[in-house]
Length: 78
Image (cartoon, rainbow, N blue to C red; front, side, top):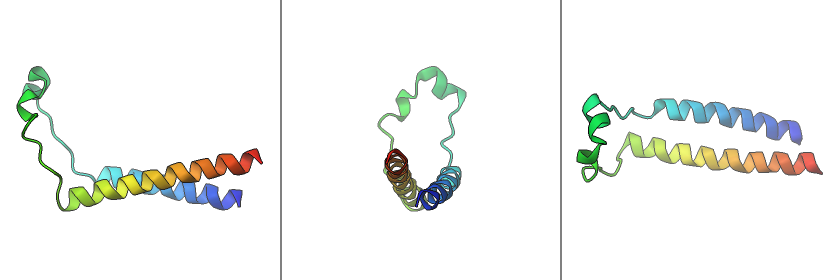
């Protein structure tokens, strides 16, 4: 059981890396660094389409990672 959970955890880890790498980059330029990005404070929009899907996938994979980690700790302690 321990080896199965460890394998699932490693697969989930790779999937998290892929999901994070597939998310679109938020480009910042030098003016944002100097001004602190205050101009963008109220122009934030809710992510739609592919970006929203990738955020949800990343959250689900993160929850799975957390649950598998806790299961591994529980099994290794008993």
